[in-house]
Image 1: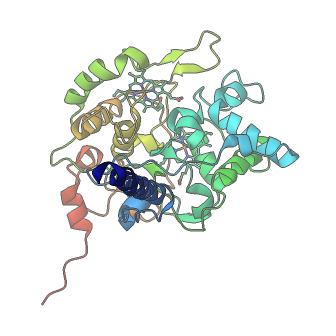
Image 2: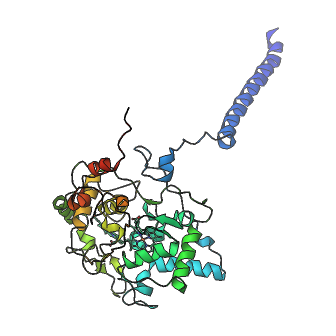
Image 3: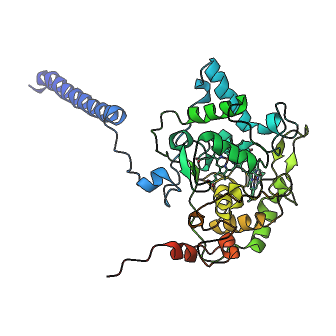
Length: 350
Ligand code: HEC
Ligand code: HEC
């Protein structure tokens, strides 16, 4: 008798259907939970070179630079106030130490931050994160072991074309405190990803100031001005766009006066808004504009004691004497590979 059997069977089918549905839902849930809370896929291994020096090899430009600690975490103590003052001095050096400085008039009106972007925290824009972990260190330029104070003083005398604050001054102590605070937690001797400047492949020709002049006109002049003089803010105490050459710029003893340092800096930082992972200049444009800007007049700093061992001079150091026979012109503009090859120890004879 069909009609009496049907309800029981129908119920059975319904129960089976429900069980199937429940199983499906449980399965989907399990997958979602596993995705959210399960073990993470192992991160891509990082080549040692990429981790310490940069630039990242092609294809990995998107990796963020190691972030600096959050300045909001600077404690509200006497020590914390000193760190904050150090950060302020690095960001707005001219307000305190420039020609109209409120503390003293020692430097040329630029800010440390003009070259050490975001107070030295931006990746590959002369980033400071390695400083605390790597100083004191033996620097070949002076041939001596330098502490952080000496390195800061160097930039005041060269990049800021002025005089340094004394080691024991409130200002020096504050800048050093800030640099140490930035490097907190980075083990001694280690460099985290994004410090300093990017590496830039050499050109196989000399960097060309004439091509660089055109790059400058197209990509730099609107901010830095037709004669590289920059643009002051209305109060004339700080620059909106810092000078690139002329009497108010860095002197010829400064790190940026080396064509390679300038090229590396602008590759990862200029025109303003560019970053190491979103550069706006080709490698050639970076080298050529560096050659152009560093061929323009600027203050001279006699540095007779630099590089006491001339064999240690970087290939692009633009002042002789050299331990090789290449002319100053080639040291300044390249090509650098032949110079490097000449310095390499000869391969062992078989
Ligand atoms: C005109 C650009 C410029 C300005 C302005 C400048 N610097 Fe520098 N600074 C550099 C460059 C370029 C280097 C790296 C040079 C090199 O290694 O040859 C550097 C290196 C340093 C280093 C060493 C970094 C390291 O990891 O070894 C410290 C510390 C430093 N600067 C501090 C300062 C302070 C503090 C100020 C301001 C008082 C300042 N700099 C202003 C360009 C500048
Ligand atoms: C949109 C405006 C703008 C453009 C375009 C621009 N810059 Fe800059 N540049 C700046 C600013 C602003 C700073 C200072 C950054 C800071 O203090 O945070 C700076 C800093 C610099 C510095 C370090 C400080 C100094 O004066 O020595 C160099 C070198 C530099 N720029 C080179 C270039 C070059 C080369 C180009 C063209 C490829 C260029 N800039 C294009 C705005 C610009």
